[in-house]
Amino acid sequence: MNELIQSLQQKVGLTGDQATGAVNHILDYIKSKLPESMHGFLDHAASGTDLTDELKSKAEGLLSSLTSKMNF
Image (cartoon, rainbow, N blue to C red; front, side, top):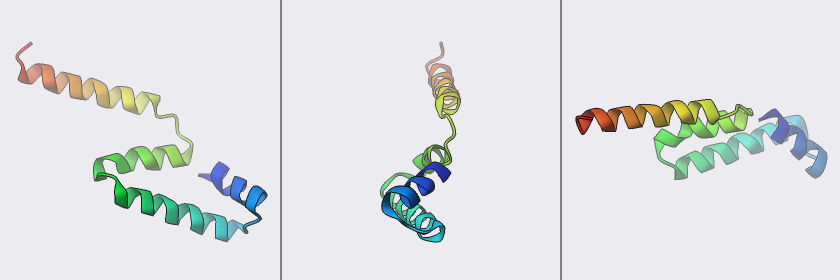
């Protein structure tokens, strides 16, 4: 999120507080349009966290759950 805030400050000329407020408002708006299960992914992406490991873990959990229900 800091990268986005800095970008807004440099490219648009917002103050740090303005840029932070804008980013938080946009994230809240996007979250209001997404299922709650997606909010964590958005928070991680906004923080600059690499989502690869988290997505892999979620996919493995889903696959494991599906295979156990199908008796594989």
